[in-house]
Length: 212
Image 1 (cartoon, rainbow, N blue to C red):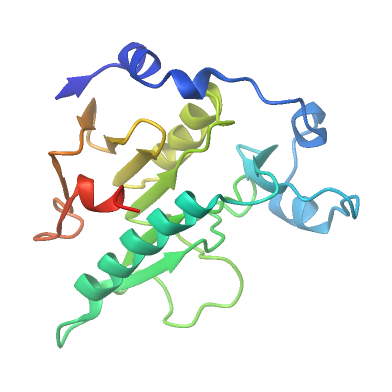
Image 2 (cartoon, rainbow, N blue to C red; image 1 turned 45 degrees about the horizontal axis):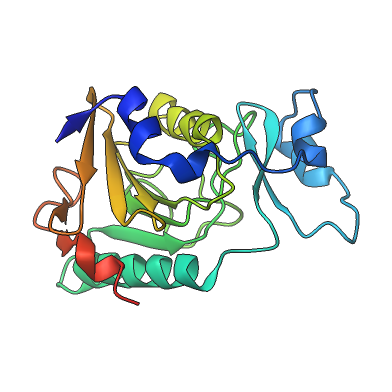
């Protein structure tokens, strides 16, 4: 089912909730990754921050919920088995690994799950993932606004991420974003995730992710 961003706002009312303004959102200065990583945060601040387009954005506070973690573990383990169960590795799967998207000056994000195709990066990289993943999985929290979700997915698109699975646990659905088309795909419980050209042959029922 092809949808527009206007429809996303209709089917995802939980993302309209505006969270309390955080210190990160109040900072207007643009940072490089080096400056961002050198910042010292208040010891009482449990928020996880990301850098998107040079701006500091809170990811979540104080951390992912049990449902969030469960979905991430399920999809990450399925991807790992598919990518590396054969004689030839298809690539590396990361659960929560920090990533610079290949632009070390402006972006430092932490996808819930990501996949990088074989040969695109060292087997044992030091520091964050140095390239834009081929596939990113984002599990959206109730505090995530439409603007925040859009900005992060736009950063992925601008840096060449080929496939993004944006998961909405409160609504039991997934929105698929592809680099080669502006059309979005909405998947419900009866539908199936498809690795497409990124992971040909990978299939996963949407309902399997929401079985707690």
